[in-house]
Length: 226
Image (cartoon, rainbow, N blue to C red):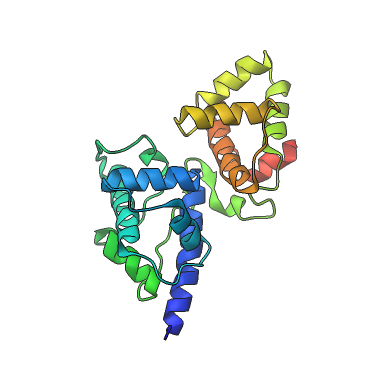
């Protein structure tokens, strides 16, 4: 029989995991790849992550949490202690870190969150220059035509559109070449994003604009440019 704390834990963990992934700007597939790379084993799959993210998984292998715990530990030690990992596939800089006064969370703590015997920790209010409060405000990520919005911003700046786009991409948070190419195609009107992709790319655009223009950009500010 399922306990009430199991229901509440699963729901709370789903909200936490969704925010963790969204703040990283990574897709489910890229997030899985980062976790598996740091674990050294392909234990986490996209269907499992999606189920956890949407609160649909009632029973799941403990090995799934091993990968999430490995990622959580590595992110904490990377950002708080400056530790580098040979298994980092280039995305660790994007992963928000969390823990408590005793240090990073690992597999055990992640499992405890899922089954409802540990509260989910606080993620950073601001990550890579983007305020989560703004993301969750009146203009949530995903409602914008991000490609058209970025194209308008670049066209208003001096210089050639393609040159400006290249300058912006130099500050794009992910070094995944395929993802960068897709984002450029979206800005140029050559491709479309799904709603989930739009959520992550809107945050990525805010981070890139913040670094490129050396001023804060959030979702609400992007919306005013649409």
